[in-house]
Every structure is written in structure tokens, then in C-alpha cells.
Amino acid sequence: MPRDHSELAERLRRMIARAELRVGDRIGSERAIAEQFGVPRSALREALEELESAAVIRRTMGRTGGVFVADGKIERQLNTIMGVPDMLRQQGFTSSTEVLSEGIGVASPSEQRSLGLADGENVFRMRRRRDADGIPLSLDTMVLPMRLVPGFQDSDHTGSVYRVLSRDYRVEMAQADETIDVVAATSEQAAILGVEVGAPLFEIWRITFDASEAAIEFSHDFFRADRTRISLRRYGARWKRVPTGR
Picture 1 (cartoon, rainbow, N blue to C red):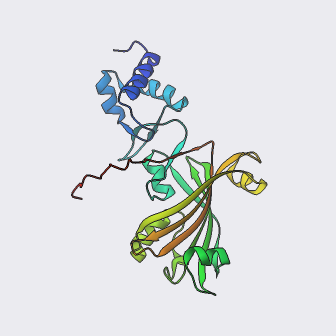
Picture 2 (cartoon, rainbow, N blue to C red; picture 1 turned 90 degrees about the vertical axis):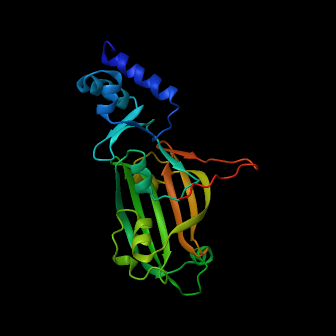
Picture 3 (cartoon, helix red, strand yellow; picture 1 turned 120 degrees about the horizontal axis):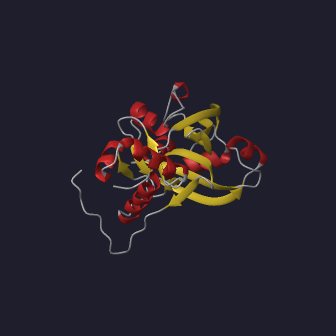
């Protein structure tokens, strides 16, 4: 049995390293970890507090809660299409959204080209700030063709738009084209995201398509580089996906 919480914290660090756990992976519940190490939960909590303050782990409550691997950054995976709320929840962060502006208007030339719209078609535009654990993470502008999502302006936009599209419009996002750059925060972006003017931001342009390859979403996002990691899984030419039967 570890002699003090610092020794227990070090054993937890080694366990994470041996298991090759990635950021966002769930280590287990406090009860399960305490039983595994043969220590009372009070002692474990002291060790977890030490690791949490060092951004090695993070703890969440609830049925899907537990202890998760962390490093203080949110991992944005490019090989999946996932809304920010689900991405944060999967990695053990709490998510909140502030809608900064929204409304219906005629598509701009760039929106028209990106979404394949006819002249004069209306779109729904929305600008939001996303927070992770109450700290600003991203600023996003989303544009949707109104003819595909009539009445969308009356939906709740503080959660996952992808869930609303799936539930209310039977629209499933099948693929996306993204372009990523690193830019310096403007004074407006800095004020919204809580960073210094000139701080690095990931700038992401995205066009998302449904299964019929119809363009559903055109978006322009800015993520704080100090809180975000971009990841992508790549495959060799001989790799072949094994059917899972699901």
C-alpha cells in the first residue's frame, strides 16, 4: 500500500503510462481505483487532487463520470464528425454554449458556392462561443440552407446542432471537407475567447455533407490553440477495415 498520497499519485502516473492510455480515456471510477490499489477513497482523493491540479487527470460526476486521462487540452479528432458538446463530454469536460447572434438572410457569394445554393436562397446563420469547464474554447459561425431545415430558427441552439438535425430533420452528417490554419487572434476574437490579441488560434473552415453528398453545413471556427490539440489517424495503402457486424 502506498505510504502517502504523493506516492499513490506517482503509482497512478506509472499506471497511465504502462497502459498507454490516451487523453480522454477513462481510467475508472474512484471506487474501482481505490479497490485496485487497496487504499481508502479518502487517500485516493488526495492523490487525484494532486494529479488534477497538474492536469494529468480530470474527474467528472454522474453515471458516465469517473477519472479520465487529461493534459489540460481538448483533443479535436479530424477523422470523426462530432459536435463540440459531444466531443467535450467524451473527454470528461463540461460543455456550455453562448449564442452571440443568429438569424435568417440571403446567402453570401461564398456561402452560395460552398452550399451549392441558387441565387437568392436563404440561409440560417449562427455565431456561438463554446466553453469547456466554463472557460472559452472556440468561436464558431455556422450556416445552414433554410430549404433543408425549415423552422430551424425555433430550435434550441445551445446544445449539439448535429443532434437537432438528426432528431428533427433526419439529417446525418456523413463526411466533411476541412481546411485548417493557424492565425493570430483579432481584438474582437481575443475579447470573446479570453486571450491576448495576437494569441494563436486554429482557424477551421468546414463544409459538411449528408449521405447523398448534399452540402448541409458551412462553418468557420476558431479554437484556442492553448486549449486544443488537433489529431488525425492515418492509414497505409494496404490497410483494410475489418467488418464489425454493426
